[in-house]
Length: 500
Image (cartoon, rainbow, N blue to C red; front, side):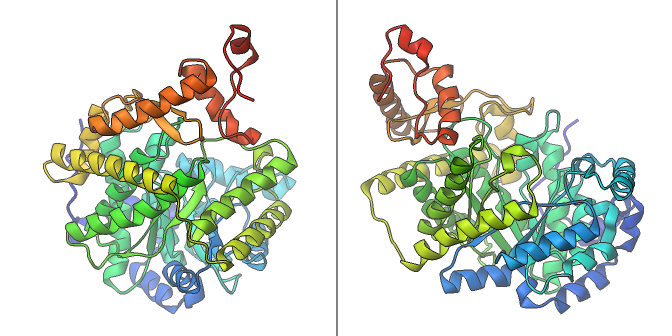
């Protein structure tokens, strides 16, 4: 039965009662003391506060790297973060391991023991909950600068956030849609939103007592080739949910899909619309700390070293042109497994070269193509948000739940069985992504006509109909250094044109 969750701030006494069962999930929960955590956070220097670092980057006009990384043992973690600090990384990632994400803490303990005994790395991330508050503070205190920000799963976030906040982490990946839409098969959208609501309320509790914690938001990470309008609408929606629970500092993520004009347009439209909707619902005091960027996790990594460097550096260039405060760059060996400390350093040295050179030129690109992409993106995002508010009777959380059921927000090839999976996209002749099938997305006839015209232009250029094969070709294209996927030899044998 669907929980009757609403976008309404959880009463403080009710919230404090909820904490008892959360902290009882594993013995390290007993290490959490709210007042001690608040006092510890207030003693942290500005150089370890996510909001303060982001403000400084904005004022200085710089783009920094915000990587993803995590390793199991405390000693190895200290070594990793000192390496990242020496590479000029101001945001310290804490990617948790798969067992932690599954709440299988007994297996984590066994894997930690095996790692210590054999030296073999059994875990694929940092086991935040098993290490607990005191051990994690050792890691945070091992560097002079750097704000720590963990990434977990929808099930592990409540307890993980309790431990992370008490340990001194000042940024949290707080997206209610990311795990549910991209990594979960059976998770229910209402239960998922309720789980994240606890996390948001805890961060709001700290904020009410003068502790600045920043929520960074990926939204619904799409698992097919389609424009990012659904993703960006959910970014705004989940930030409205966070603001209701008392969160005061937020960061939207914009995922790049490869077309420069389209990516830059999304960078410009997102903070504008986010500010508009926050103000509309009375959250004028919520600060948009910055706008972060990353290349989408959808596309495969190039297999060759040259392509891997190019992929990372191109992402850095677009982020710099978009004036992002930070950008996620994948390491050059990401396609091979867990990245090494050396690959982190090499990747970020290369990317920082682009970030420093491009941002230093203060380039402000003005292109008709950017204006066109910004217009269409704004129409789509507004249409989705307004429809979610309509079907939720003004409650954005209820609207999102109903929106999933109705396909008002949708993604192609999502692993979650609740998703309608009725939309699909392809690239146009410039490599911008268009909707081929709209499903139940609430777009105007004008918006749909725009996409259909772009798809028809691609079909004419390729000499073949837009279909599933075209989508698959486009999926692989960017990792091969191509804007669009070229027709296969089999298609050419049928007499279809292969673009030169």
